[in-house]
Image 1: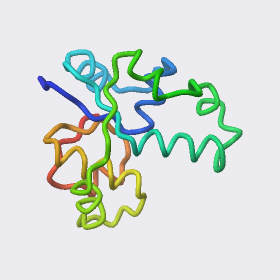
Image 2: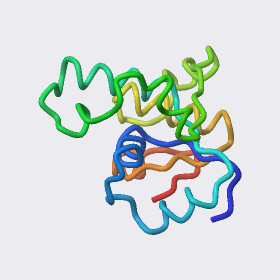
Image 3: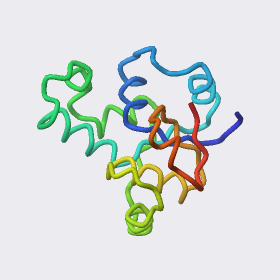
Image 4: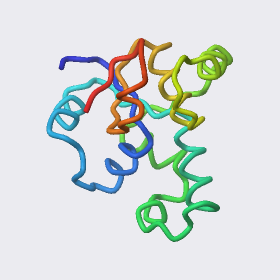
Length: 134
C-alpha cells in the first residue's frame, strides 16, 4: 500500500516506540514507506491515563518515555491536535464500539483521509468510511 501519511492506533504507537515486534508484515512495510506517521493527542491522553491510573503495572506503558510531547517528534512522529470537527464526528460515528479513544482515532483518520494502522478487531469489524491497515 502506497500512502503519504498514516495515523497510528495507540497500541501500534506503543509497539513502535518500544521496538516490540508485534506489527504485521503489511503494517510494518506500509509504515516504512509512508512519508509521515501521525499520532493523535487522543493517544497521548490514553497512554497517560492508562499508565498512571488504570494499568500502572503494565511494563510496556511504564517503559515509554515520560515526556511523549518531546520524545515522539524526536523519533520523527507528527503529533496531531483534536479539532472540534473530529470530536463531533467521533461522537456521532455509526459504530457500536464505545471506546472513546478509538472513536476519536477512527474519526480523525476519516477526517484527514488517511489510513489508520490498527489490529483492533472491533475497529476492523465496525468502522466504515476509513481505510484500515493491518
